[in-house]
Length: 137
Length: 85
Image (cartoon, rainbow over all chains, first blue to last red; front, top):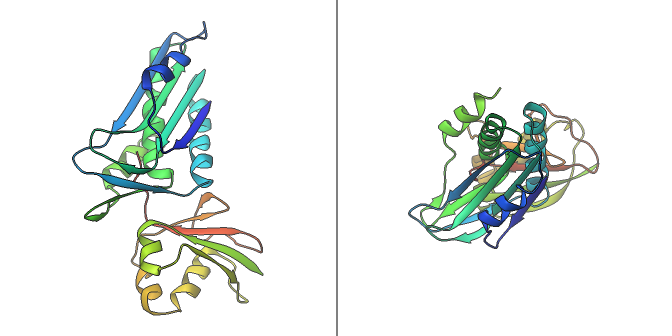
């Protein structure tokens, strides 16, 4: 299980390949979040962020058969089309991989201490993100 | 009894500080009580931490309810709802 909070970009292909080497792995699901439309800066809570992401991954492992999981989230200044977040889940079967990947993203959106700031100001949290996380309860 | 208090994002800007060490007054034993104590400073504190404001809290880097207990040496954080991903 790998969690990284970093300013530099990531190579999603390399991260996916890295989780495909275990012969028990039959499915690798991944999600890449991309910055839309406007430039932004991401602030986070160093220490708690990594801890929160670890807890989310542990929660996913308790719910589904997860062999490996990688979560990378960038911080600092980001431009439109930049990659912002990556979740990769490796499992024996696709059902677990898909579900765990979506769960990690939904929980990350409401539990991990990141905040987006655009030129127009701080981005407001969305109720739809809370609803997305609620459905896993 | 001292605690470390941190503020993030919009709240940090509104309060003009990213954190401080606070000597907890007698009777301030929960996150809610600390929030109320800080609000008592008036001005930006009163506005930013008003009851109606949606604020998330963490104690020792775990999300916490406002009823969570706090004690000496704890790290308490106040911040707006998160917007990562």
